[in-house]
Length: 152
Image 1 (cartoon, helix red, strand yellow):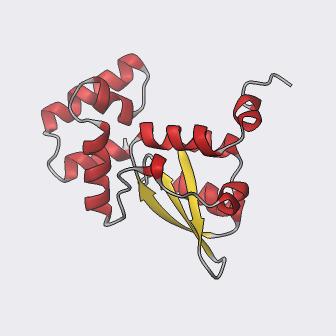
Image 2 (tube, rainbow, N blue to C red):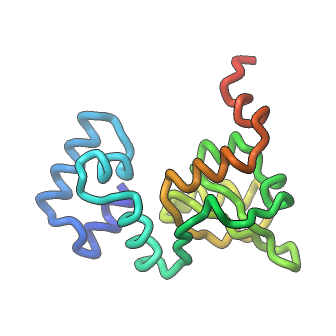
Image 3 (cartoon, one colour):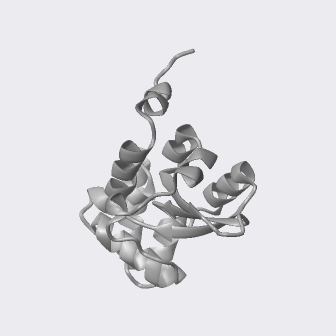
């Protein structure tokens, strides 16, 4: 509900619409993000734009065409990136922080999980889900992508 509260607090959602979206989430067992898309209240681009503006973070427009650091990718396994819908794009020159593009940078648990795993300070950025998934497919090895389906 963090995402819905963010939108309601900034008057992007009325109280009535907020209530309808909460009901939708309960009925369809989906995420806030998916409910906002499924109900045609916002596009992926709208959500990324509003999150970037509200959180004062960088909004990545064309993530799938950016140069992605292989060393940054190597620090975050595909399975975690896929689970959290995020993709690391570069590590700072002093190796103390990493820029990571998130679907929902409001989710501090996800940011903290990436930070704990990489042992780096995480600088969250935001992009559309489509761009994040396309970038993951393009840059992570296919064997890593297929491994999430292994039953072993």
